[in-house]
Image 1 (cartoon, one colour):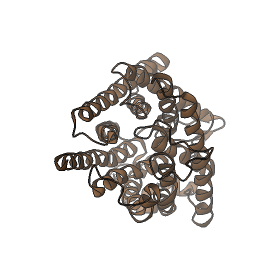
Image 2 (spheres, rainbow, N blue to C red):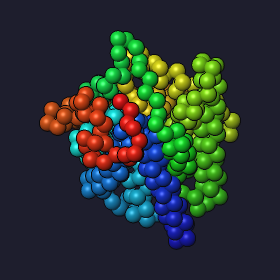
Image 3 (cartoon, helix red, strand yellow):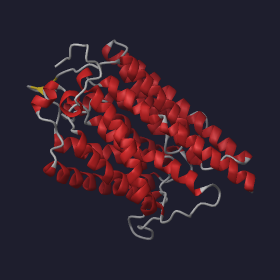
Image 4 (tube, helix red, strand yellow):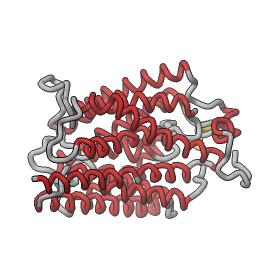
Length: 390
């Protein structure tokens, strides 16, 4: 028993470390996708999110989500906390990436506190935690969502929808009904960031199995990681094939986002699939990214990193997929979970962002966007020797 406790504690800490690799993953991905004049601001926001969201979760959010600090017997409570803490910032990363190049840092930090202390812990409470909705019509604790296709990715996506509706688009993004193409500034960074996220996903999903100290658990972890990787592979292939079919070009940013879409899609149930089902789940996930990125632009939902398509759309698809492909899991139960989370997260996020925006303007002015958020918010540029694009 003591050895199992030690092994599972180590496993949780190791999985947490892999998840923390997603911090530089998001930072590099977003820094590469934005223009050079906004890179320092994006990096600053990513560091701030990890620090602020984690502190808010430590001081307030964790106990609210799980009811107490002393609820684990199979591993150290400290290790379990660190594993859960590693997830928190990812919710805000999804939102912050989608409002890049036009968001001010201080109001974004205030929203990060709200997410880490209250909004995200509310969703954890009703799904993985203490569950204050137990026994009510809104009880969704029976939704199957291993590592958070809905709990994390859709939560971040709904927060992003609220932010975009309040903030609007970047200066000059939509002109006379046309979409102005704003190319990525650093493709190598985008690629590095995507693969750091991919590696981090093995801890994200594998660690969510919760234990590895028995043969059964070890097989479950290995299957989970294998299926996670498979779905990412076919998501990348879908991005590659469909962009070439549609545009006759190989778009590396769409290929990488296709892989991330596949990873999000499989996150709800990688421990429950056979080794072939993730091939289809990931391919559909990548295809959804290729289809939804231009769709959101048509709706004038300006999302520089494709977060809505990767995280919100595929968070929904991945949660429904468990109900479609896993025996004994009702698709209606999965759909109910998606709807309840949306009905909680979107209004809370909209109200919180609206209030913050009234006190501290969240969207940078057009002149500030023209100069670049690096200069106006950070006082330094990532590439000062380069001529900045406008």
